[in-house]
Length: 254
Image (cartoon, rainbow, N blue to C red; front, side):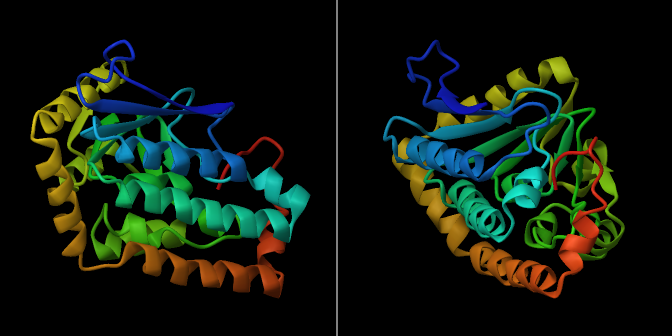
């Protein structure tokens, strides 16, 4: 179980690209330490003056299944507070990364995964990729801020209330996914876009990223923090535990 950083050019970094890879079997449902490690890796890559683009991807069955529900069930409020802070930190690290971040998504992208890709600068997805927020089925709330960056407002609400998912093809039609490719081509397609971005002047890219974030109509950090307050309310009222206790042994993530 790890978060690792590498370069597509045999570790040289000469192409200006850092690949941050998440690998938390079986489904990349991250514990507190996983979210924190991801935040640290993305921030470190962005601070490296030789890096001009970051590619965020994952190993295994899917890109991200959200938080580790079993950790919350086991450790209670301590884990809940920890993961809420760590998720917010990871989402912010992607958004505030000093260089553009390309998310390469395969399989499922759920819960916290939406927070990551919603804050990325570009998304490349495999044909089997699906995107959604099963939060209401997991006794939680949050990341509507980020889903709203991927689909129109009314579709976001319908997906949120029903816990349904949208396909990569649907998100491509809405303009939020750059390319949809067969699974075996995902890494190459993400690196192709990253190389095109990284071919630009590094200093100018960093200015461009800061400028684009500065004109964003939504303060994503503040918006997500507002949502998290309702997650805490759901937990204090007991409704979160009631819903979470129906979470089956064969299921992972949130």
